[in-house]
Image (tube, rainbow, N blue to C red):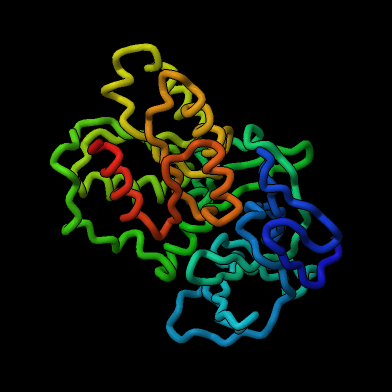
Length: 315
């Protein structure tokens, strides 16, 4: 794909008339190189791909933060993935490209070697990275797509950002003054479906801080659904399935599919399901509503998520 400047319009049309239909169950992965290794990001997170531009350095910033530049009246911070992943830039790629992403109130450009194109995949083709992988980027990889001739690693971009200590208040959230209704049984079991170990920890810590005691996390929607199926049809449903909190983009089974399976089941349809994702925007909200989600929250709305959860459980 010839790249001059690629700009997404409403998550629908990009240069060369490539169409991205957010109503499908496909993962549309933007494939790119860092050094000579293949990585990917969900196209729904990408606002533009632009050529390298001159930057203004930020004094005393981490080495991987190259600097900032103004783009479309926004201040964009540039993170060099070559530094993050400890992979050298190849000479044939020149200065590389910027993948610009909007994370709610701020914009970030990820500096990569080059962009390969779009891979249309189903979530079922994305696998969990092996736990034995201890290389430099194992802790920030959430999944891998196995193609015939290569493996594309999917990065945990939220964790990359948080590790650099800007743009997120996840770990600074203060729940000391947050109280849940006294009518809630805090021994009720909650299920989390989330592929980011970092965000699993954030959620569990937050829920424990407000008093919940039984929290079970699963790496993806499929693992969560398989667990739910083991207790379906038994008395354990009432005690071990109070609510589900799910990411949207996950290997094997996405959050919309998990939500739909729960809400279309006569026995389970009353279980509240909340979507918690960086992909919460107008188009995705429509899909979440169609699937039957009881609430949808962006990553910055952690307190709102727990307030909604508490309200549902107090009924």
